[in-house]
Image (cartoon, rainbow, N blue to C red; front, side):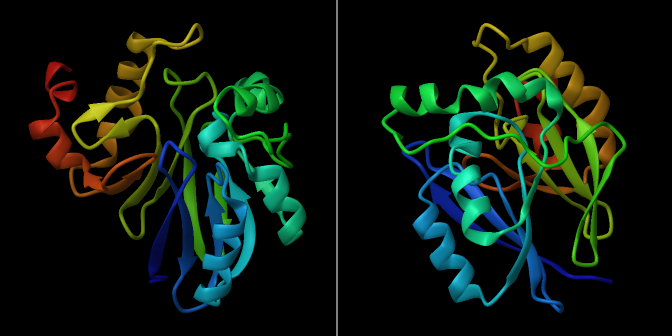
Length: 214
């Protein structure tokens, strides 16, 4: 079994969980959600001695995608994700960056959009794609069944769920995504959210007040 390892790189004033996800044996991996602070991300890559094969985006918000264009140029790799319904957010990154004090943010279009049922490979690791809208229209969750691990983006958190108070957000849609896509993955699945601590689906099913209503 390919052993999955994760290094968390907090970025931006929002302390977003940018991550370096890699195959421990092959020492090859991907950067997930490079929202900014690209110099810190590059430093972590250098220290890890991991060869980066691609950049993955769970959705198009500034704290998750603001550094993607710069990092793609620095590494010479492709960007995969999110779902195409977040194109308007990716186009709007310079405006969002100016609003939140991240003036270096640039708009970006991924090399590959991700859809429900697609698969992403990172070395010998395979992630299945769940389209999980609600927080943003194009949010995706990446699930590695072999290691029972998910990259959750801002869909589900420890003790909470993603914000839906944006003009394009929908609490009902988000909760349907969690109920129909995330919870069926299984209580044993560990996940890394876009902010805060990692958790496990079973723990959230028992303790998360939003999930207990489902």
